[in-house]
Length: 375
Image (cartoon, rainbow, N blue to C red; front, side):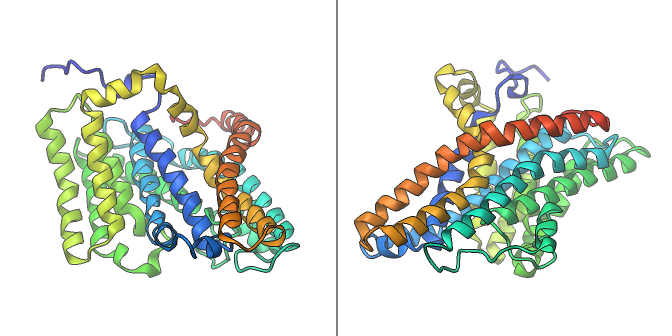
């Protein structure tokens, strides 16, 4: 096969800006969704802007599909860039992911506990959590709060647990495929296993909400992202890329025909967009334009914004509820304050908490011989 004139984006020292841009937009929508969903500021704003609040409440939440699809995309990039089976140290790889996710998550969880205590001085509201028990905190530390039936202490806690489960499941698929491929080389084995599990998720598991604390419920979207990574590889011929993408789009389309879910439809669109953008000159131009360096910076702090926005929104809600007039204009200013405050708090959290804890995690990884994560 003749090499493409477009350099493969995986060689770029920058992140995939298409992914970062999607995450930036998704984080904003999640923050606004929680502001609309939890109130009480949004209860007043709804009086003058009912359509906006209803849309943020009902539809903005499906932006979580961006995290699922891009999570699968980046997991495939990190674990098996070429889609080949096998991994040398699966449990160390899973441990590396845990060390990356959990320290900042626990810091944000403790801030959420403090925010609930502060907000309770100014208002009584369903969004305020009761003081946590030791077992509840331990379940959060182990990312088992949803599985064990403990109430989440922050709005984004469920997703952190699911992200870890999905990454662990992808790692174990890689390990299992390596054992099977040891008997007979099979370059399509890993993508085939991902497609098979994603198909099971899309056609069966994702249609039963009782599974929504477990990775298989979300693996359809995650698998779409993983296949998108392998399909966007410019070293693959266009025909091979279409075959890869078609292998997962077929069950996805069938799943939508059987039971239409807007979240799955969005995941399909996102996966196709990632392939098209990153197999074209658009992706190369997006990655190399230095005027767009702000995307890199905001993309890096998206996890921090996701973690810290709920305690910020909770405290701002309580302050405006107690001290500001119960009028749409004042409460609208409160929602805007909470949104901007979440972004500023996310930047501070990233600089002073996520990055230092990441260094501690890297030190722990070196002590146990875990290779640094690819991000």
